[in-house]
Length: 156
Image (cartoon, rainbow, N blue to C red):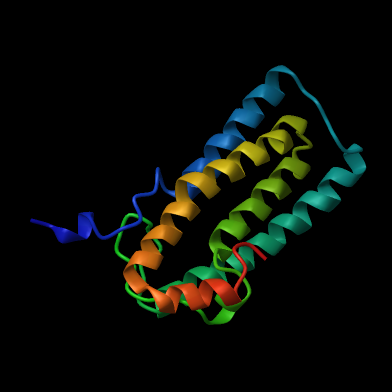
């Protein structure tokens, strides 16, 4: 019997999938009912920098996680609490980078629908992923995780 199946947070799906579904839904609605929310000349100047900020956060968070010998796949067991690097500033820098990327793409394509769907996307990530991960980590690591949680904010 494989005990690793039970040793995970039991999240609803992998977080990038949630962001992708929200973005695709917003883009489809935008295709049929286009609604801009920024002047076109400004949209790219906001969207591209946001995307450029998201990328290094994601790369650094991913590398830091791997250096701690953790698998970023939420369906696998967590082996240690990562509390160095960007994880000193945010407990969820990978999800933060995905949210920033999502907002950047929403601005770049200038889609009000994508922008409006960011809230439901973040609610699903919070309820279906983060809360489950936190419960799992509290159970697995106890006081060590609770101390980390008390010192470092969930997002920023």
